[in-house]
Amino acid sequence: MEERGLDLRAYGGILFKWWWVFVVGGVGAALVAYFVSSAMTPIYEATTKVLVQGGQAPGVPTASEVQASERLASNYSDLIKNRPILEGVIRSLSLPYGPATLSGKISVSSPRSLIRITAKDPDPRLAADLANSTAQTFIDDFQDRQFTQIAQFQASLGQYGITQDSSLISAQAATMGTLSIVEGAIPPSAPSSPRTGLNVLLAVLLGLLVAGIVVFVVEYMDDSIKSAEDLGRIAGLVSSASAKGGLSNLGSVMRHRVKAGLFPVTLDSGQEHSATAEAYKYLGLNLEFAALGIGGIKTVLVTSALPGEGKTTTAANLAISLARGGKSVVLVDGDLRKPALHRVFGLENSRGLTNALLGIATLDDVLTPTPVELLKVVTSGPLPPDATMVLRSARMGATIKALADRADVVILDSPPVMVVTDSIVLAPQVDAIIIVLDAQRSGRQALKSAVQSLQQTNTPILGVVFNKVSARGTGYGYYSSYYYGYSENGGGERRSGAPATGALARAFRRVTGRKEAGREG
Image 1 (tube, rainbow, N blue to C red):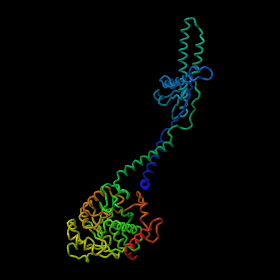
Image 2 (image 1 turned 30 degrees about the vertical axis):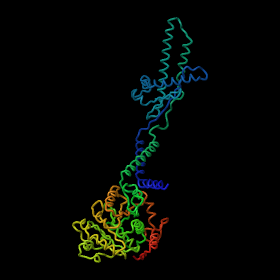
Image 3 (image 1 turned 180 degrees about the vertical axis):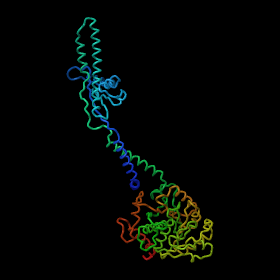
Image 4 (image 1 turned 120 degrees about the horizontal axis):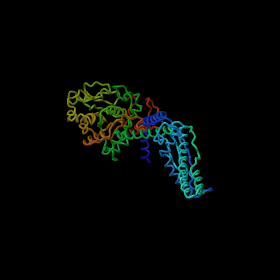
């Protein structure tokens, strides 16, 4: 039942995500059907019913007589659209077209002992005239043929001196009653086609069906990871800290709009209880739980599969959250190609990690304080010509160990795995790895390749962080309301129905004996 509930939420999320496609498909198809139907010439139908009686004696007909009438009706219906009958109708109505055109306007059916002659035409009166004239012309032609045969037979009898025969009189009477019009056609008041209402309804259903097929194809071809459950369905993605298999979901962070060149970090003390801050508190708590499975961690590498997934923002906010939670944290910019931490914190980058690695500066010289009391940052410093060689050096490993001795946690921001090998070089020098995913565009294959590359380093992968989550995405609206304990305005007002993850984190710290940092941090 739990799995079914998650699937229903996923399907509901897909419908909510692509609702506009269904609206466009249904409304667009309805409009097209309406205008096409409106542009079509109205066609009217009129029907004449002809009764067939074959060899019936006066009184109630027997079963055999009824069956004979039904067979005759079926046989006669095949003769109505013959060319002589059609030509007779054309002459009687002075029609401006030939038998072939008239044949297309007339349809004949024979239910039981009746022959239904239906005529279609844009003119309702002409449709009725066509049906009535066709029926009458056929009856007249039939009777003329019968009378001709009787007359020829009577003439042959006259050669033998027989001038009157009662059977001939009976045959003439039967001929007159074999075919008769029981219901004549009248001009219809409404057209039979186009049926605009029905056409619009069918078009809407067809439009929704096409929209559903389009959405299915797009979702099927979409390589992105749409929900945390998708992590467990990707073959080969096994977290070192997860006994159940599949990458662990460490947390989700909502997408935030910021000005160009800025980063959505929670440096201001007024943002301590914002939705973003609460998301990273939850991430920090999950990080501690994940660390229990590998005996504790002090150095963490934050990376991503591709550029632009938010690894730098995640590393910075995670460091801020841990520092506000009472841990001494050092945040290191290990991206020696496109460093960004100095811009996140508004710091100079003239002196940093590379200066310490070259021995022209001490760790104390490059450890830069931040507005968060227990957080210090090591910027990248001047960029080297070969970043991979610098990060692979023994001095880099010694520097990480020295920083770990000075702080409770060291967090390294590193380049994307699928772009350069720097993260693969750094991974063996840390205790654990966190992978950041862009919930809008991270691809399954890219993530799988990145994880497989990192697994070769034998460094535990704690799990992934879903970044840039949209509340309108599949399933994320549910998760966001669960993760965030406070409202966006930065105040202390809790969201209705959302668990207090901040309180949970503080309780966990009290149990483990760690003190909580003051609010002013």
